[in-house]
Length: 276
Image 1 (cartoon, rainbow, N blue to C red):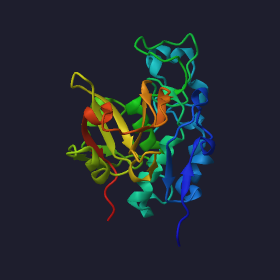
Image 2 (cartoon, rainbow, N blue to C red):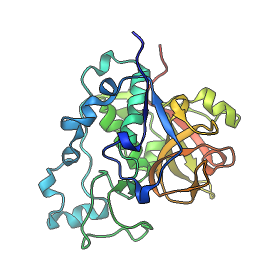
Image 3 (cartoon, rainbow, N blue to C red):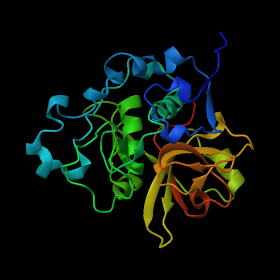
């Protein structure tokens, strides 16, 4: 049976919060029907953001937790693997990670563990936070949460520790699976040939320290000029194919030859193996 393709846009992502009505020129074309790829993410327990943390929603904003959590808020719970994961192909798993991450397009850049954590005004504030308070995730908590919600695979949200993973918890509790490190391709064109959808690409800052991580979208990405796409949470200052500034937070962005994503790339980690 030939599976129909889906192009997910902002209109299809009910959980997304489009900042200032920003309209992205980028999209993703999946090779699995919506119901098969992410039906449980759109309805049921995996769709309920109030059930994403290790504590009940009623305790999220309990003042007694301020000193313990600080501005980061409650930790994300470790999800069970989705039903039937063992029978799914690696390609399905890779596309599901991207589909899961795209549910949060439009959420802002925040140093949180759970995307819908939205602390009140009197809650402790990260002194280094440049964006207004609100719902959102930082780069490594975003990649960790996408894998966790999608597959029950739970990387750490600490960027340095995540970048050095040799194994990762999951799928589900009391299990670990190996993580494969891949060194940088030789050229910009080689990235598209050698990386797989869902790979974690780590980026260094200008001082040479590991500082950022993105999800590689790869061949399922669609951009007006054919530039490969990544999905990440970062600050503003990145421009799309139409010359429009992409808001801070979680968005599809282009992996351009002159971008810092390419120029400062460090290495790749592969959690989902190659197709057999």
